Length: 550
Image (cartoon, rainbow, N blue to C red; front, side):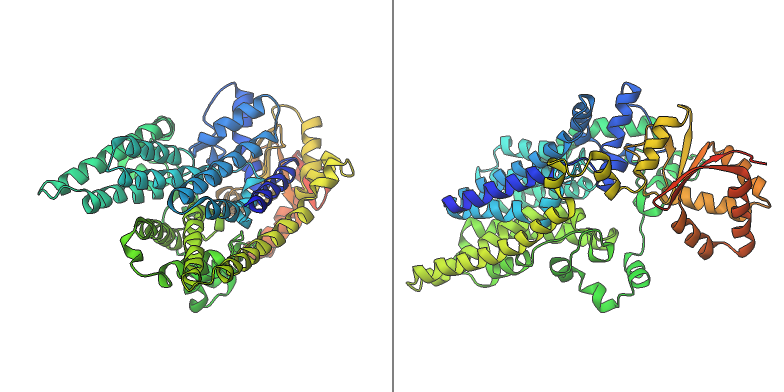
């Protein structure tokens, strides 16, 4: 028991050390820290049409806003980590409630040490907030059943679900699943057997929906006032048709929430066979890699698949009669429903399915408990304990190897000791950073910089910029294709309006070779040579001022 607490403390300490470096992760710099930084500069919340992510729900970013106001740019990481700790505490409480404190602390260690949870814990993302609120929403429903459908627990679950909706758009899926859950479990487990039971179940579900939407409503109202679409940019073309708005959305289909053929995309982009694509539900547990979209841009643990299977198919006699089996079915149903939706509607990323992880951890602990019970019931307590230790050690060894790789990648000790300066550290992850410093120090305040293949990272840029979203890159390529001269490109960009262009030169060259003919490539080269002034080139990135040079 003490050893497990030491292991848990060790992981918490390591995460705190890893989180102590400047923000360098992609979504921190393009969204979660950038938008609060803009609000501070503007003196309040205002519409930012050039940043599509600013329309997303922002419960956690409001906390980041307060931290950045006091110039504490590392604090948002610890705020995000706090939600991971709250989820850890919730898992501990639930397993202690259902089994005992020994398996409870094991479940806490299992959750907090999972590679993707560690990676999220050292970032200023919002996924751990989604994980936390979704887990407590499910836990609230379980407590609601256990306490004979007392309203207190239903309201608690609904409030958490509403906070979940206000954290990330993925919360809409959780909201839909749990709203169905409420009606189903009430009709199945309520003691009444009257003919009005179904109506009561529907009424309870409606109350759940209303409470959740009430918590979520500020973000719905904000987006409706700004765009006439309460969930902008999701399904924007649909809302435009409903409101008869003539403008056509420039957002890519993936950002609008419209259907895209995920399977064909993987087949074409990654060369995967249909068999490999259909095996994705298993592959995510074994093949995950950070920063590799083909491999789901994150790492899980294979035991999260293997141990839950043991919990269902290797159980003791009469196991179905207890509450654990009921909870297993609830957790498994949530996992399957959430995964199926994600599998068929969005690009597969491990962190996109992170709300499933607490359920998988609990199912894994149930599976481990079944291993212990089956061996223990054969009067082999020592053997049972040995097998639990072996499995837990293998689980943590897998996670420990990943933890070491994060220290190798982020080198927080080198940064803390002063071997690497802050500027040098940021440049290692953001090659455009030296040019952004140059922009901040030299460009006029009214400058507008067009990003071209920079990765949309704008947090360290103190001038207005137009991010290199898919829609803006397509717009730039179309300008080049439709222009009849280099001067026409110049005038089109000036009318955007743009004063400077920040270009990743090799990426731009490759794109022109793929999407433009030789005449268009030559015309763009003439535009750079005669209608821009090169201010600086560093790390294969060039900063150009739109200016007729001759």
